[in-house]
Every structure is written in C-alpha cells, then in structure tokens.
Length: 353
Image (cartoon, rainbow, N blue to C red):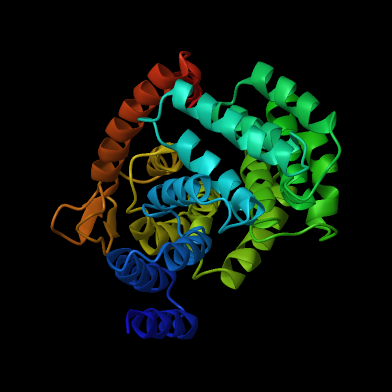
C-alpha cells in the first residue's frame, strides 16, 4: 500500500541528519500522497517539510507547500485545525517579503489574511507587527522601524509573537540604526549574558555587535563579540540558516584577520546557492565589502554546485571576480526590491557601503 511507502520515507527522515536530504525524502512522500489523492497525508507531510526547510539558508519548497495547506484547510475545515499552521504562516510571510517578484499588493493581501486567521483563533496582531518590523529593518527605513516598534510594543505578547530573544534582537538592530552602537550594546546585555536565547540568538546579536563595534572603534568589545559568535557558529555548523551571520562575521574578519576571513568565505560561501532574494542581497553586500580588503588577485578555492550563481565551472576564483559578480548582483536586486517597495531604501544601502 502507498501508506507503507510514505511511512517508510518518514522513518528515513527521522534517521538522517542532512536537512536537504530530509526535504527531498518528504517531497517524495508528498508526491505519493498526491498521486493517491490522500489530502490528510498531504497536509501532514507538507507541515513536516516546512518545519525542516526552515533550517536551510534558502527555501524553495515551503511556499508552494503552504499555499496548498491554506487551500486544503479552506476547502476542508472539518478535517484540519487552522491553529496548526499559524506559526508556519509567520515563516511564509518572511518568504513573501524575501521575494522581489512578490508585489506589495500580494504581501498586503497575505498580511490581511494572516491577521484574520490570527484574530479568529484568539490571537492579537503583534505577530503581524513583528513581520512589519523585520521588513523595515531589512530596508533600514528608520520611519518604518519606529512605527513597527511602536506597534509591537503597544500589544501584549501571545503564543504567536516572536520569541523574546528574537524580539529583543530586533530591537537591538533597530537601536543600532537609530541610536548607534553604545545604546545597542546596553540593550543587548540580556542576550549577551544568555538570559534570552533561541535558535539563532545570540549568534545574530554577537555578529552584529562585532561588526558595528569594529566600525565604531571599540575593538576590544568587537573582538569579544566575534569570539562569542564563533562559539555559537561551531554549535550550529550544520545549520545553513546561519549563512548571513557567518558571512557578516567573515566580513568583520576581513578587517581584523584576513586569513581567517578567507577560510570562512571558502567554507561558507558555497552554501549561498539559493534564489535571488532579500538574503542574497544582504550576503552580496557583505561579500563585496569583504573583497575590498583583499588583493584583487587573491585566490579563493570554492567548491560550488552548478546551481550556485557564482558557478563558473572551476574551483579557483579571484577576489576581483567575486567582487564583480556580487557587485552586479546587488545592483540588480536593489533595483528590483526598490521597484517592488516604491522607494529607494535598498539603493540607499548601497550608497552607504
């Protein structure tokens, strides 16, 4: 029976460590469920897939899987519990913001739909404002950051709010942009001291403070934060969702320890094999900045997959080649995001670089 095939694949998922392999196994299981028109298996397997793919630097299967889940629930509300996928809806909102081909109208419609589902299940709008704050931070738009923070803090936390560590980390990022390095360090103390943690905090916080500390001339604190970040990376070195943090840390090292920066870029840049999205824009900005600190002829040995956007059928790439490639990419993405958002926020980030 097909259900035995599905269960066998799920058992394989439980035994493997590689997240990409888990996603591939679940995709196979979903195909079998769909071929047999088994909506309940299709629903459960897609929720599993989304939960696994969140640990990858780039997701490709989650958004269509989630669209299927929404349609399955709306057409069969008696079979499923809407509350089961509200947390995943938060992740999917980030996916929509990440994609420059998704219009503002589509994002606003999804936010409205998400809000309706939250409210009818007894939750508030704080999760909505968390997503708005995340987008404002990505755009580095101070007015939008101010408004989103005000909206977040005006509402009580509930089970759909971002975790306390993530919310505090977001506020640290906001303070870095709005008030500068010193106040941000003070705000970050509970995270640095481990009072609040989650999957990617304090790693993300420590990397930001190392980078900004160096730029602000606080080399001792920057070095302390970099060492803390390194320890966090070693705990999660199989989790490709840390990609942006490790590339930003490599950029910090390009100023303080170019040898280590080169090692980190050679190790982690091959992970950047996803679509051209908001994360790729951030990564390209940091790589361009890092390359400035190397001789243009410095050689990097990169084991890239064929789907990697830098792939050129070879293993050795010069700093100049890398800089040109990511410079062109970041220009294109800035234009696409600014066109989508109706402003110049991404272009302004390039000017500041």
